[in-house]
Length: 267
Figure (cartoon, rainbow, N blue to C red):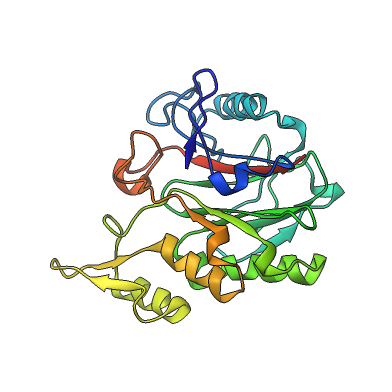
């Protein structure tokens, strides 16, 4: 990923997506916002107990830095499910100021047409940004272990194909910072759910008898199985737990803590 700081804001971009002038995107870091500890500083999540006014101000700052329209910023109520929704005219702006106003049961969003920014919030789960340069479509997906087990990444690809005729091989995908296999110890139940969704070698045993899972790799495999070309998928390779000074990590920092975001909008 490419560091793209703006004033005091920490922002990152995917190299593959950054080559396309018709799309604007970023993954946010922790610095440059107004939230106080334990949400310091650039918390964008409105569902974690932070001062709502601070969250809105942080979102406004990010929109200003990226040239996105805050009034058209749209978010879902993430529930660790596989709900993927096409954002229409009536949904634009939902969730920008509060979690309660977000699109219900939505962990993935698809947008068509310029100026509408969508995004997902994470603090160890996998954020994915998808772009179809041929049909000018974009999607944002939140994939924790439950969403990964439910195959939400592949479902987003299918939705793009079914609703808009996207060819999976045309997609460009960024798989953002998430807790890595170095730090993600899971139970047998979680390990088995991921194995069933991705394959028997999706997790590996450690000496301390915990299972170790690589959610970013698991989602990459699902994208490949759905027809996305390997050379059009970019993995950040960043573990949020190891890099908790730059990205929020609930596993490392505990509760409560903030959320960073992966945002995308069409120009």
